[in-house]
View (tube, helix red, strand yellow):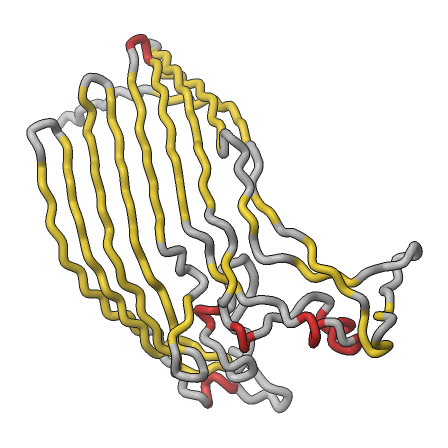
Length: 279
């Protein structure tokens, strides 16, 4: 566990507890005569005993959804949050070679701030859509696609004024979040189209499957939280702010994500005959 400078297990002393989540779900579904299923569900989730950062005075649910290490700090089990919304699902089973699934989620996810008000959590995308469909043809051919959409995720703006102070930047080497504006900004909406073509060969003792998979077929790029950098001279040294010698001169650069990713593959499946055991 986390220890302070004296070696004390701080979070043990803080009587840290397991996160508690209470789920409430209600819904209905309908099966049609065309092998289709319609369903709708409403949900409400209450979170309690969530870790709350002592240093930053924020819930760990609001520190961001990027990969990284969190929790190596003093926390208390005092944060609370909630998530609620609706889920719609349409599922079409195989009919004349066609199949498909359409799912839509409307969600709000938020946690209490140090002021006792709710702020969006890092997973508060609002609208999430997934559409998967395909067609199976004769002679082992299959074509399918999946389209994904997610609303822009919230993020906390960078505190440029504090981050640009020389002593602060020399220690951290990156922009620091302004937790007084917790998750008040959002990235752009995200969507992508994935396409896949399969060809299957059934042989006597095995089957062979070839596929072409294209991720993000139209190469959509989403805009994430900008990145703060320090200006450098021709020798790579940080440049001092000409208006304030105690600070570095900084700049914000765009941060985008999303590339076209084609791939090909081969799948082998061997057929093994089962043998009955004689008594």
